Amino acid sequence: MVPGFKRSISLPMSPRRKAPEKPYRHARSASLPCPSHPLVSHLEDAMRTVRRWTSEPDRTPARISTGLGRIAILLAALDELLRLPQAEDALRRAGAGAADPLLDDLLRLADAYGSLRSAALDLKESQSEAQSALRRRDAARLASSLGSQRRAEKELARIASAVRSAFRSASGTEIAEIVSEAIAAISAASVAVLLGIAAISAAASASAAATARSSSVLGPLRKVGFRSSSNNKKATEEEEEEEIAALERLEELEKCVGELESGSERVFRSLVNTRVSLLNILTPTF
Image (cartoon, rainbow, N blue to C red):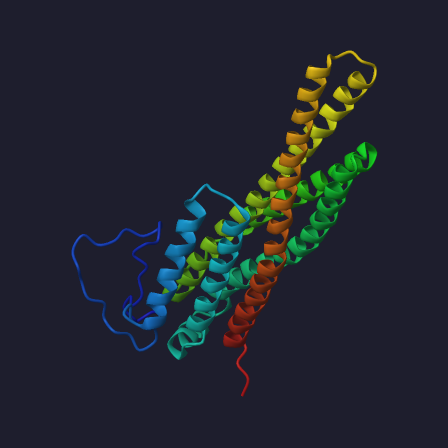
């Protein structure tokens, strides 16, 4: 905190801070906006919304899109706060010691989303190939595409691990702590997005692989007459149901990848813009 100034911003929903048992008033500061400032309230609301989404276990293409959208909204709110003259002055007074960890975290997140765009492209290609191979019942082509899809899933898990381990909490000034908390919420939500996509892809891979195994076993048996006609009909119906289910999962993954491509690009741009705003505070131009 800047010497000589009273605490003027608080985040009552922050897990690292305990809310006061009784209401109290914050002293208005010359260097930081008071808690009633609309941008401070907007940032707090955006953080709560992102944390709520992160805590919900359900992951579908629509919810992945929602999560990416909420991350982008939080980043926009953070960028707006950083443009306040009071916030700029507080961070400038705190110096590089308080801001450097924030710059590093934003850079790591931007790098992660850059890698995510490449992983999304690989996943899109392998998913499309698997879908085509399954429809054509081309076992060799399907096996190859599923192998590529699993490699993309591992890349998503690797990026999630990098995001989780990269975050460093900043301190030294109230505004730096607030920015740090926002970045922490963004990091946690980003991990949830990455692991959610990997889980949807893994379910699609497993379903397609199971369908391929079933076809490779039941098909030859029917051809050589090891089953009665009624059993053959039942086996054929089961195969068709499995194939339809596998194609539906691959189509779900296709939607998810589409949401990921557009949403991750938006988040990437927002991360870059927010980092530029922070850099401009530390290196003002005259």
